[in-house]
Length: 330
Length: 277
Image (tube, rainbow over all chains, first blue to last red):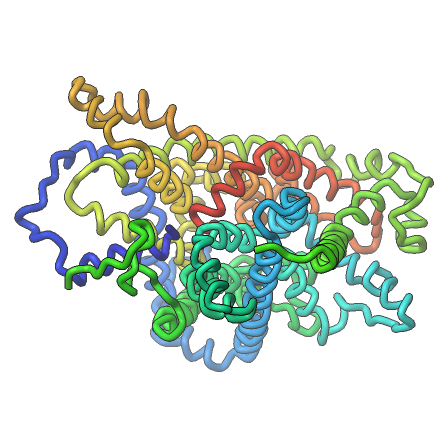
């Protein structure tokens, strides 16, 4: 089960009222807390504490050298008026909204082509997976600069077709596209997740559908897709969250500038520049909280929208493990 | 479901074409790293006999310090991160999976929730803390958090694994009077070696490839990791020694590739059970 499935399970248990608090026994109270000491320290000192601190810093002017001074809503006003910030948000949104669905669709499509026990399965899987292991590295981003350079291999292939390609990396209309392609290139890891999900769909569902005369498309629409929706959903949620935080590829492809003409200026890259080049730590903190709110909004929307398309088998009254329908007592 | 022969052939043709497309940039990188600098962009094919080791020789020393220095830094950092994650995440996972204590569900939900938290909201204060501690230009800001079970993915992976172990084993050990430290160290850890292997490999790959952390905490050349050192090749565009840049890119990817070869089984399993990206 995915991490999101787990959170969902915890929430539902709460909704149903759980076990009355008085009846819960905690025989391992001491040991449990002792084993979690490292995590407690980590969460307090490096997560919750810093979150509170950065929320405070968001309302200050702080350059790391002098103590922070209270600035009220200045940073927020400045964000509203900062055109580069809105541009960086637009660039990031385009990147997220285009690259994540493309990557997941390709991952699902290829996973469905890789039938169980087919010849060469292991080799295909390895080849498709390898790029997603390497894709986040500086070396691959450096390679991308050359692959899509004016004299790179992409243009060499286009030349074979008689097309003269632009300098993809140095053209403001195309630079972001190369980073999107880089993201799609790493479709291997969601593909592995989809493969695992596909293998869990009982063969008998398909057999039954075939007996009923269902065609290929029908089997996909009525069996494969609904049963995969929880997996697609949590991939979508997590990939969107991670894509908002992409940094390395934009940094390296643009040589740290976000150029040409801010066309690859990701929100995180602008935040990095504000914090560590301009030493605008207060402003950067405000930006970070803005990013958190945007990601939270996307995630909340995803969860709300999931009601309309994600299918949870355990909610439908069918318990697959028992092999028969068993209504859960209300 | 059986597919007919011609259709299956067609599918293989498509998959092979996609494989080539996926792998071609990597092949081009490797072959170009062995080509004389002058022919890298004049002859883009990957079939050539004009090969040389010059790029590796030049590249090795092109960033002022020998590249072995950056490799060593990345290796030390990765090792520290691996040890930290193995120890701290397994402790937390044992508690979440096997112990019953007040607040467990709440803590577990918080732990899972941090997976979705963009690290930027803690970035500036963390930087200030590490600066106050005098840890800038050391590996500590990148290693110490690993000893505090903050990589929730691995805690979750291990929780899932421990939950799958037979309950009777733990009950029998309790009846024999074993304490939790004995059960954790003597029973759980040996049984969860596959989950530990997955954690090791992923931690290695992520730490080795990490760019943002070293970029802000390690700014002097002696401390550069491979990622930050490679950046030097694009900073100095004027010299544009593409061959050397490609050669050192290959050097930096080689450990990742080896980890992939050795640990593929664990990687696939780890992704499938947790949905790690």
